[in-house]
Image 1 (cartoon, each protein chain N blue to C red):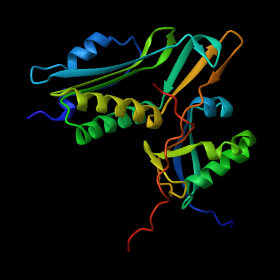
Image 2: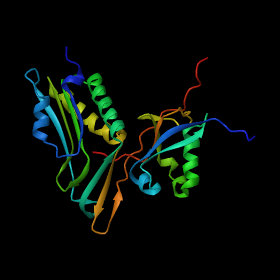
Image 3: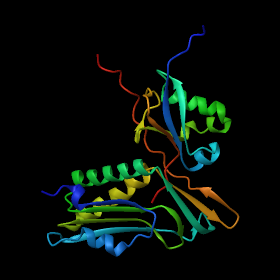
Image 4: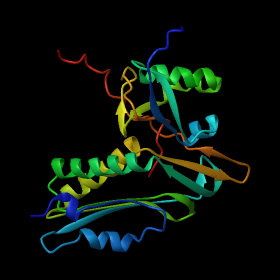
Length: 156
Length: 88
């Protein structure tokens, strides 16, 4: 029996992402649709011309959080396979930084799942982006992941 | 003979702007038994005064899971103080 871990693809790469190959990975005859999200490096940020970006991650935690997103996608939506691939290191303008593909029997679940996956990734996965400009570099502002509530008193 | 409090060792990691601010990517430190994530952060805030103002915009993790500031440390924990994330 296949588990999501067998058929999904959740990866951090230090090399270029091949979007077509990732999209093919999720596609199967029982599906009727694949929705993909291709996130790539824009040539400007707040009106400043971007030269390139550098991404770093807390890799074991980032991979764990990406796998959690994959598991949540299967719980929440009627989808078949999920691929979430994020690239790290130096990326040039136009390079794909993140690619998500979700296959499903019907399109609505695939659209919803893909949107959920990228939104959740951007808010919870410990990856950071530094933007390099002609006159300096800044860490992108980002989102603070929600902290869990204070620890409960241990039960006696 | 001086009274010596028992200590434990934890591994501390920094990323992004906080790594640049402290100049530390990873180190092992000793701290008193019973110390919390907040106590450990206060120690770094004393060592790096610029870090103190960052606390409201950091989230702590223990062993690769987000953790509340009152979490007590255990030996060999991997602790990180994470700035706002900006993947994607």
